[in-house]
Length: 226
Image (cartoon, rainbow, N blue to C red; front, side):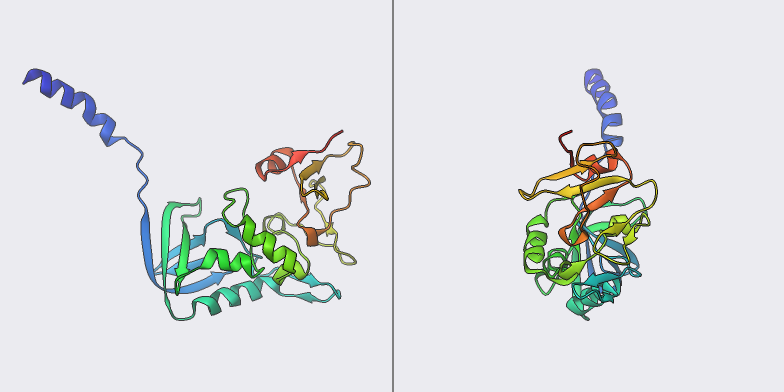
C-alpha cells in the first residue's frame, strides 16, 4: 500500500502539468469580418492556412485598373456562407486570441474555396494545405491572380503596388527580392548578389519583397546562387 501511494504522488504532478491540446468544434450562423476571418457566437475565427487581401487593399487588373480586392474577398466569403450555419474545427488560437480553424458551409471547405476562387492565397508560412488550390487559381488567372497584387502579409508591412507597373514598391528596409524561377523554385536575392540588380519582382507571379533573411527563410524561400 505504501508503495502504491508513493507511485501515485510521483505521477500526479506530471498529469496535472501536461500540455494537452483539445480540438474545439464551433458551429452556428457566422458574420464575416474580412476575407479570412469570421465570428460565430462571439468567437472570432481565423481561417487556417490561408491569407486574404486586407479590407483596405487594392489590386490591379491587366488593363491597369485598380479594384478593391480586399472588400471583394470579404463579400465573396459572406456570399459563400450566406445565412447557413457553418461548422468550424479548431485546435489552436493565435496571438490575438482568435481560433484558428477549418470551416465548412453546405459541406464545402470554405478555406479551400477562397483560395481556389483566387481571393486568398495559401499561407505557406503556417500550412501547405492549399498550395494546390492556389496553383490552380494562378494558372487560370482567377481573382487576384488576374493582374498584379501585393501579398497580404507584405501589405501589412506597408508594401504597396508601384503606381506604374506590376512591380511592388517597398519600404526602405525591405530590400530582399523574392524571385520565382522558370522551374518554379523560390529564391531570394540580397543586395550585392550577382543577379540582384537584374532581378525584377512581379506580384502577378506571386513574387515579393522581404524585410529580413529570416522572413524569407520562414516563408520557405532559399538563397539564390551567388
